[in-house]
Length: 352
Ligand code: SF4
Ligand code: SF4
Image 1 (tube, helix red, strand yellow):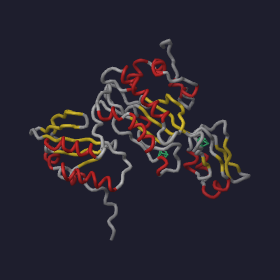
Image 2 (cartoon, protein in one colour; image 1 turned 90 degrees about the vertical axis):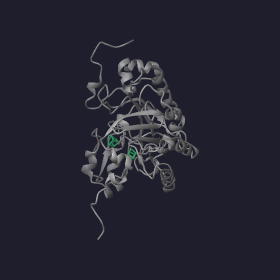
Image 3 (cartoon, helix red, strand yellow; image 1 turned 135 degrees about the vertical axis):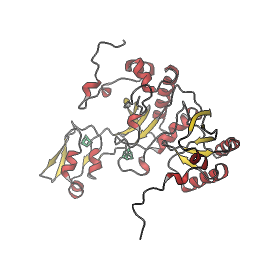
Image 4 (tube, helix red, strand yellow; image 1 turned 30 degrees about the vertical axis):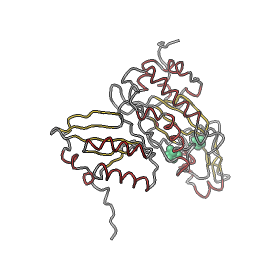
């Protein structure tokens, strides 16, 4: 009889003895150097977590390499963080520096702690999904190469969370990150009547459109799209293989900024669009990497210590953000969806 409905293994089966012994009894932690956390328990026990970057999409060989390092330096214990970094759990302080040297010898950076840029939360892209407007792993590699110094150091005003989603479904954290790169289309879907007839529940397809741009067409037993109403979200293609929307020449990347999930100092917030479109330019996406670096550098040299990117923009005002960065403000930035009124300025307070 196969084992079913067993759930995941209990996490306590995989904890190092030092964590089991001091579970719920930690007193404080410090960051002795970028990429290393030191937790001290009530009884004085010390645990070092060495955080290393990972590309998320990894081979079994890569995982075996990490396991070999964990066997050598951490009695076989490691974990993955919620941003897909690898954390080696070291209870012998003398093994921290040798482990870091071993990781760096393999080309794996140590960092992502404190006021740094940690790993980029990202999605499937052209590797595995059928609805992307851009690639995930490719852009993430290009941006992390460019911003490498911010991963291995802690010189930013506050934590910087960058996320990437290859379509507006926003699998992951793009809607609530300091900086987000999101794949966007700019042309309407191409209705293939035969595919719609064969593979689609038409009422669900009609209901999938947020702007009511899709209507049934009884004559063709398919649908028609009012292109004036379409804003190229691609939701209809998720519902029906007869609504292809990918367009290599017109698809690209939008940049959003200013989101956060923590409640520290200020409430969590959504990220907002500041660059409507940058071209898909594989394999290194120079326009995207340059735009992200520029925003990071303007933020780093203007924000106060401890201020997240969105907190900084809210303090100085969005008009000042566009002036400081030189990013062009266009009609595309003005919200025109159902509850857009809340985003308009209803005050005479603004800066020239
Ligand atoms: S964000 Fe969109 S394209 Fe990317 S993995 Fe999710 S559904 Fe697929
Ligand atoms: S792309 Fe979006 S807005 Fe356009 S027709 Fe499809 S669901 Fe509607």
